[in-house]
Image (tube, rainbow, N blue to C red; front, side):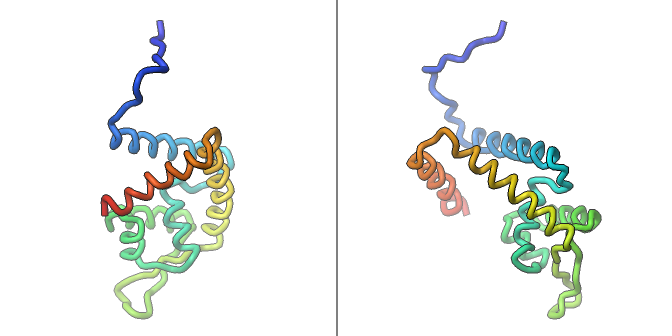
Length: 148
């Protein structure tokens, strides 16, 4: 017999766990939504592609902006390049370094992903008041200053 949760029971107070699980849940949901629309990118890859839509960046710039270590960025960019979504261009200022460039195929993928992400963003807000959404945003933005 399935245990029924008491609606008056306090919510889990393990904030780190909750944030991590929420991110996993959201990325899983986005992954399924991307697959349903036959997108070939993952939610993790969208961060890189959105940044590259603005301008070509070095691996170091991607790493710093996304707060992801260089080895992880290298693996992500390698997979994106293999799929044809990005290309490595020689950096005119440093021949040892590359600028990562968004290809037309990558641009198509990120433009299609943007529609899904906007829809899911609205789904997140659904059922909450504007005040609750603003409080939620305030809490999330506090992470950027509290945990630099």
